[in-house]
Image (tube, rainbow, N blue to C red; front, side, top):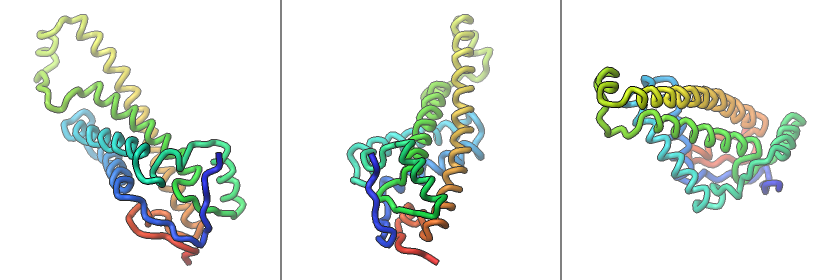
Length: 205
């Protein structure tokens, strides 16, 4: 199903506050945990929980939020995304009232990967409030060694999946930024402005 389009001379309204909050909040969390915080540290864990909460809010908002923010307004479609890419390469550009087809695929891919990263992180870290043994020897002494070995193997799998998904998020985020910049140039309008609370309209010189 082809998403609705709007005239290239119409004004693109700002995204609603919930979309903007979750977008920039998740972006900040990804940058912090991907490039700044110490893996497995307390700050890293808390930022991960914040990212999980923001993702949950955005997914709920995709069901009950404003029309433009709902999943029904930007269904993922490979064929539509290919057509949109072909239009861009041919110098044709159409605006969409919600995410364009390429942006839609990127959003769902990032949300899916973020779900994997946060859930595997929670699986490894547990509650940020729980007291942890000071050393591994203390942990082994307080649990059966077989259980401890099994737990270590599970953590290794979770850690591997966590790291791969986290690296993919950084790659896709870089592609997302590049794609928004390219489309803004081709369309002659600032596509970032609506995500900052402003309007973007017409052909901007």
